[in-house]
Length: 159
Image 1 (cartoon, rainbow, N blue to C red):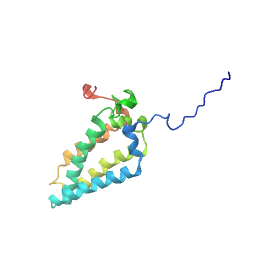
Image 2: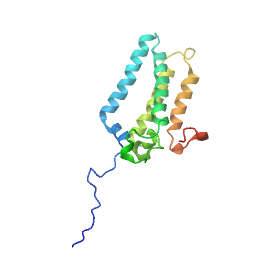
Image 3: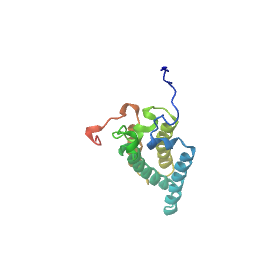
Image 4: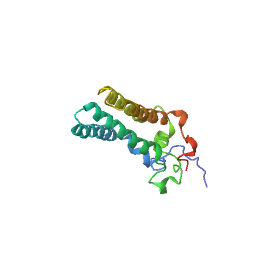
């Protein structure tokens, strides 16, 4: 019987892929993401005369939805494949296996900042809620900092 050394190369079927976040690597995802933001602005601007206030509404809704989807929900719907590996991680923590400064993380960080700038500079400061816009962008950006990776304040959303 001969002994052969195991190969250190993995075939694609052996590579562990997190199905919960792997779809974000597709270029079409970014087209849909930016398309949804523009569509939300078009809908909001149809109901208001001020396009700057429409950006404010888009920024606030985007902030709430993206915080919930990226930083609140934990685990993966594909639990049978990951054997509980991701059950205590949010989508943001699973993205790129926790590696920071990747393209995906930069885009998810830049979009709230750009929406904040569009919302605050697009309309008169007397009409739009600057404080609320500021709170939303600060919460979103601070939640994405590398120093807060897997940090839960006061035990909120710990389990």
